[in-house]
Image 1 (tube, rainbow, N blue to C red):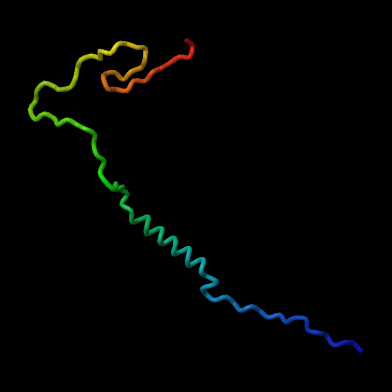
Image 2 (cartoon, rainbow, N blue to C red):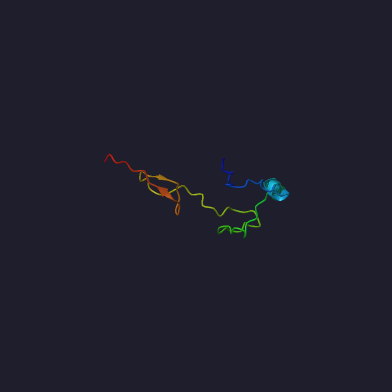
Length: 100
């Protein structure tokens, strides 16, 4: 006579996922899009610096018309072979050649 079959294991169906487990990726994606839309549409587009930049030293303009106080004399520096912005206190850029 044949042996009786032995039980090796029992198969059971897993419990179906809850609604939240099945749809949480959709809910979080929609929430992220709505938050992004809210943030994106509530920007006024202007940048407000934390403090106003300070202008450089300036002279007040004269209240009455008169002779100009600016220096109109030509540049009196000797020509040294360098490219110069001209005038005292200005930046001078030297151009040098290696073929000396």
